[in-house]
Image (cartoon, rainbow, N blue to C red; front, top):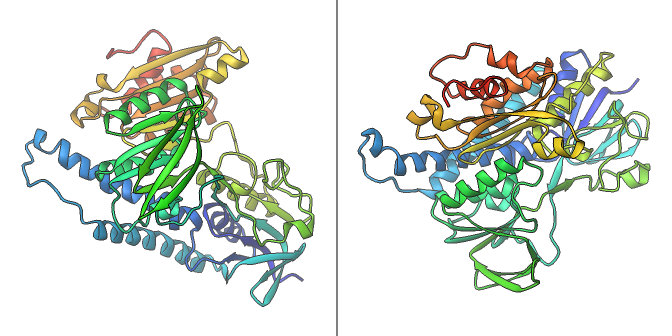
Length: 462
């Protein structure tokens, strides 16, 4: 008899959620994790610390820009960078400690150390080898490398280094206009850094609704962030604590350079599978280096599954969590399922951006007839009272059935508002269903209802 029913490799959002759900369903569970704390990249060096900085610097912006408008008169706030970093570390500690508490509560064994899989059904951690009926690889991802740039996490940094800089840089170059680059770029812009974002493509946030992307770029530029689009980075040199970044403009192949105190490489992430022994096991990979799995998260090796960033799909913590729950239920004999058509994405800049479902570009590409319902936050009383009237809600609905196909929001609390539409889409709702649902007044959520009304006879407050 195996020592455990399930061993999960990796204690990030996918891994720890899978472990907890499996334990709740009565399985004997262990998790192998080499970090000193649980929670993976997300809780330790990703989602959570970045949101702490985003919250702190948003509060700074509110004090600088809006307090006096509301009659709150106080000396201009100053930044104690050491204290802000300590606050970030406290937030990390609270969250990682919470996961450790949940492990104890659910009687999950923490195998402390980095794991390898010498054979199906066996997991080696340090000098010990443990047996399990099922193994789940949930080892997450790591920052992608960029040729010509040597990351030292001091001057040329990944997101990990950007969350632990010893001082606020006067100038920051961000390579990549995706979620990570824009979020961390906005943090340092609010702290006073001169931020320049360099992007290979001709638009920011690849894959996002085009109208939303253009609006976000305009609003971030208003906040002092510069953008260089259509630029291919060639390399960087470091001298006397500064970096010189070389790039070429794609439209005319002209050579350019930019000097910065710090360069953030935010060109995406790749699956982290080093040291697991996948080659020796014969685990099949996709052309992009992800672990190949079927719809039940099974690899080609019996008894070994994979979830989260190491397999196909968006590299999102909540996608990994959903897969973790679904897989735990499958292992326990239930019918776990993930609806990949209803996985929201959020960018936690100010304003926030959130999206679910299809974009207009995708609908046009497939030739599907649709209606657009839009409503500006300038028509929302609560948003205007919060100095947050920038942005809008856009709902896309099937022209014939009115079924919601997608929603794209840029504005206040977008990351919270999107979930109303997610629930509606899970139940196959029409835009009219949201339009006829009473929304409390005054709330920013009324903008979602107004956008739904705009899919029909028209919004009330526009």
